[in-house]
Image 1 (cartoon, one colour):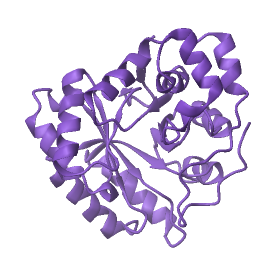
Image 2 (tube, helix red, strand yellow):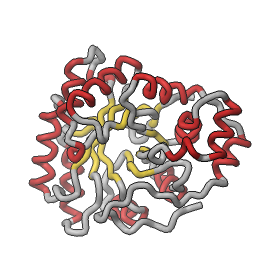
Image 3 (tube, rainbow, N blue to C red):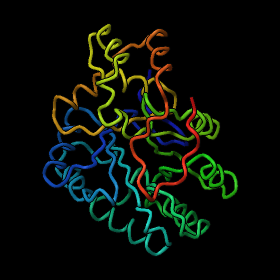
Image 4 (tube, helix red, strand yellow):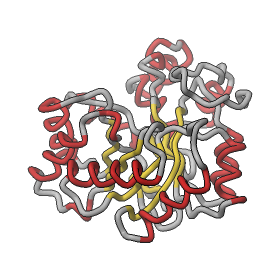
Amino acid sequence: MQHIVNTQGLNMPKLGLGTWPMLGDECTRAVEQALELGYRHIDTAAAYNNEDAVGQALANTSTPREQIHVTTKVWWDQLQPDAMRHSMERSLKALRSEYVDLFMIHWPSTDWDLPRTLETLASFKEQGLARHIGVANFPLPLLRKVVEEYAIPLSAIQVEYHVLLGQNALLDYARQHDLGLTAYTPLARNKVSDIAQIQQIAKKHRVLPTQIALKWLLDQPNVAAIPKASSRANQLANLASLQVELDAEDRALIAALPKNQRQVSPDFAPVWDAFDR
């Protein structure tokens, strides 16, 4: 199995390194170490305040920039066209790169001129500042509007997704329209390690519960996952999850878990769709 999400030519490694909430030297060391271990997908955002630390790691590593997929995002209060352009400029400067591989709107806003915001997003791709563009935390009706009414050439969406939160409707739509889906908080803020059924599957395969939860995501077409990991041991464990072989019995146990346990819902979040079992 090829461990790549290839939608619209995206070529995004399925397993990435999430960098929130790492800062400064800790973040730089973690990214450098991940690249040394074989990671080729790094996820950051303007709001994480660590793009400069990621940029330092990109400058330090011997891995060529063109071999590394970098995602960054613009915050929801910066979605006016001029503010978006300034955010992109700051991101590129901090990342010490002439482009990002994937540039996303981090959260939707209620106070925006959606057509102009989307036009600006699309312009980044046209200008080569972003190889690909996407959106994060957009519920399905809003994603549908962006894709169908405005015909914006999105390559991916990023949302919370894990064994305790279903995203079937969004995933079906993403696959129909050749979009990648990046799962953030893929370990449900480490709650997966305390789930009896996940522990049972992990024991059977002699691996960690986190590796079971990650492999369940990574086995799915078009799905990538970006667990945060700063220690060498955790980064290696997450990489090793790619080698786990889940069977039909394992997947049935996971399918039976509740799928409405959202971990991330700030006060500015959109109205989420009813969860999808």
